[in-house]
Amino acid sequence: MPTPLPARTASVAAWPCLSARDDGALLRVAVQPGARRTGADGLHDGDLRIRLVAPPVDGKANEALVAWLAGELRCPRRAVRVARGAMSRRKGLEIDLPPAEVSRWLDGLLGAPR
Image (cartoon, rainbow, N blue to C red; front, top):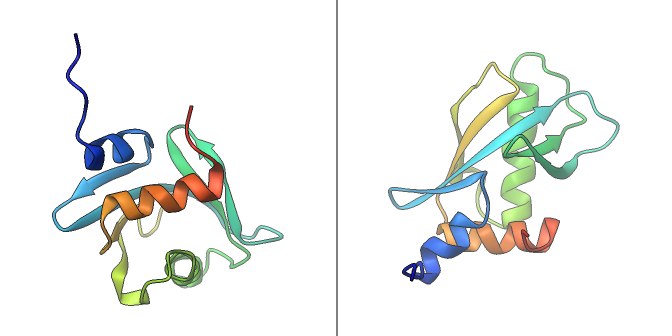
């Protein structure tokens, strides 16, 4: 019989784009800059797909991504950082929030994972 995961790990394990990291969370995203609207658009190859109105020029898309995500999570902008992929469409974002809190946000945004 499999051992059930602890509640903290179970909520993180439900989302392939989310993992626990040190005192926070790591969220993997696939960004589409230059979109008509800014918002999350489901999962894409295990990453959270985020469309951004901002163009991919001079770091504007990264700034818009951090600002949008911080607003969505209701945390200060300094709590969200691009950790990997600053010049790529696929990024890793470090978030200074408990992974369970980010998982609840994902649940509300996209519905509970199947």
